[in-house]
Length: 438
Image (cartoon, rainbow, N blue to C red; front, side, top):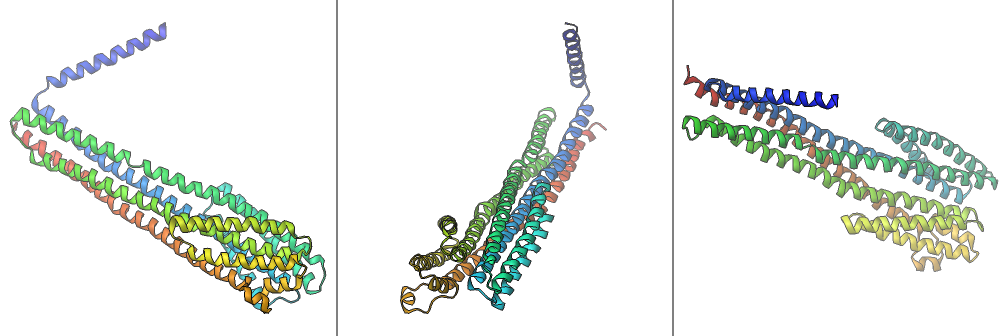
């Protein structure tokens, strides 16, 4: 009860203060009212400068965060592709047996080096949680490389134990790839969160602009009624500037966030799908080799091939249908899938040697040639087509983010200058009436 009494007393006191101030304002002389209206309008104009800068800066920062997260997503996807590509090369090199070709070894080393370098770059742009995950990926990559080397050493000497090392290496690579997928998912969420912040960033500019416009309209009306002047030119010009700021500012803001959103929904999404297809494709190629390495016991790897192949087909078809990207890679992969079917038919029929020859080098056998099957050539065509598409879409997405940022850099200074100009015009408009009392 005492608390209620105190609250009621405070409210009554505040109401009484407001009433006294209102009465005092109403009874104030005209110069005082003019000065008060001038101060309110000038402060509102300065608020527009500050709020406009803040609003545009928030949107610019959000779009920049989205761009950096998109770049990080592409970087992590590239690491994943490099790893599965290296694993594919290692598995096929083991299948050939003996001393692997120098160009194959150089290609494998290049992919591993690119994956390791990519991880270092990705860690720098990652959140603390993702950085921990990426560091564990780096450790597993070192273990993977060691297992591949042991598989190679045993394979050169003809020791069957090398196959076990190659299987262990593949298992480590699978865990490593799963970790990278986890980082990709969290990074894609960062892109979406940043874009959501960019969409919400304009409200302060809108509110400040409307506040200044209301102050100018009310002030102009009061001056027209009180002093019988139809138009106060400085205040009218200030009002036009506010309208232009709101119109142009919101238009440029909208185009910037729209361009960034188009980059996310367009080339970035297309690049994401092509990267998924590319990684799954190399994974399928590796599974094909491991199925033959584990002759008679490779059913699990053939199941893995089927799963990876379905991911490739789905991702490329979505990319082609939705964005017109990767359509050429669809045809290349379908040709490789047909060649893989020939490899499986030979192996299932007990002709393991011809299956290995076809899978690793393309067979010169007349019957096989007639079928048009050549897994290495068909897969290489898919690898080249998907790589070209991935690079093009990634570059397009990055350029779109850069263009969106560039528009906002100029706009923020325009809004600040407009706010200062409105403040000067408001001061001039009210000062003209004040001079009449001097």
